[in-house]
Image (tube, rainbow, N blue to C red; front, side, top):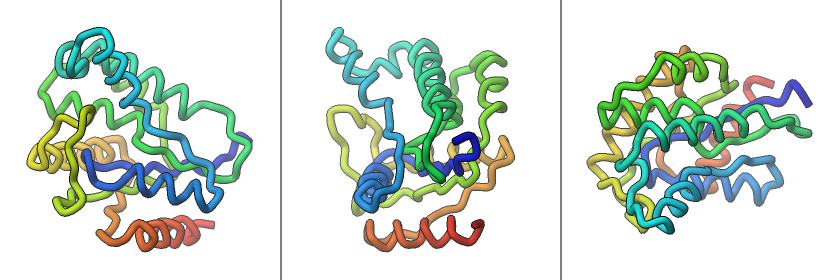
Amino acid sequence: MNNCYKILITGGPGSGKTSIIKELENKNYNCEHEIVRSLTLEGKESGIDQLFLKKPLNFSKNLLELRINQFNKKQDHVQTFYDRGVHDVLAYLNYIKINFTKEFTAEAKKIKYNKVIVLPPWEEIYIQDDVRYESFEESKKIYDEIIKTYNYFKMKPIVLSKGSVKDRVEDILEIINKDE
């Protein structure tokens, strides 16, 4: 289906994105999962603890390509929800103050989500793990970069309220249904 309505769920690390995606899937919505964890785990298996920090441009170029492919994948659904998006790659590079080529920006300009829903930092649910190396303070700074990045690409981020997973999913569906 070429006219699939694409909804991005993004935000800083540990803000509840994956829990929301899982709940949307439980409600039989089509969802595309975050792919950065698998890249990070591959790096760990090859002896690099934080591949993004060790080789940020190579890591980001691979991730950008994977997310673009994920976005462009033919969907047989009216709506698809994405756990993180293409433009997040640029936001993370901006966060660590790494200059990237114009190719990154040019590729990101080709991608437009119908809705960008951003989850704010939330200390009470934030958890570090083997793949999430950022502190809560860093998560807040990444959130700020994500907001700036989506505004730069003229996709108005909608900041979702804190609440239970169920309430947040209901809020998202209400936002989406306003457009249909």
